Image (cartoon, rainbow, N blue to C red):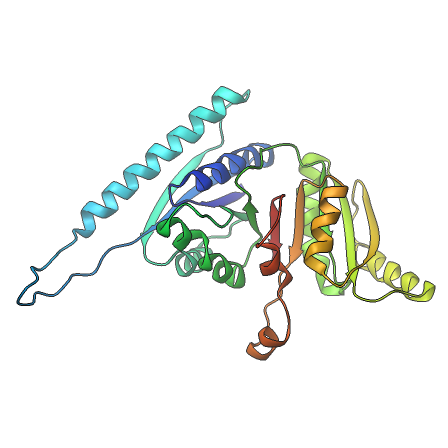
Length: 283
């Protein structure tokens, strides 16, 4: 059975992402692991003018676990009220420490089908700690697809999935995941290749041949390919998703060396700064 890891910091934005995850889990016949990393303050050593301050680890862990249970019950109740049928199974887990590091270690022990989390939050320091800079680290280290949910997006059937391609044969694994995802909803796949220069007729033919090779062993229900000319890849993808009323935009994230990170923009990270549809980051 598939397992979807859903990250929460108990914020409204995280709640929204969890509700979106419930719809996906129900359709995909998957279970959810609702997960939170909590912060345990260090002991402040006693000095002449300051009294020592001790945080009880067990108390913090227990309170955090109670919050997770409450969130899980709330998610199941809301799903039952709004949908026919039983809600997906929800398990809960919490650990102290950094969310990105914890998820990386957790993923080594358990194979997740997908990770779902809220988009960057402006709701306060704690929420930004969970979904701000750590989002980049989590994406960098992820071994499974990560789905980022904007706050105001309502759960709906995934009729159209756009995929930004570099036309590399190594993308076959990513396309296989999109095939699995599209089969669940009967989705249409829109493959888009953004280029910074105009193409000759021969180059367009070569690109299309490369695309056909990538999907040659995969039987999609409905799939199409298009080239787009733009100097700003992120903006071009944003416009494309609006024009085609796309429900999810899939982007391949490539790990780079230190020099590579300096010399090249990461489109997946750039897209986090502005987007109106869920972004699926494929490792």
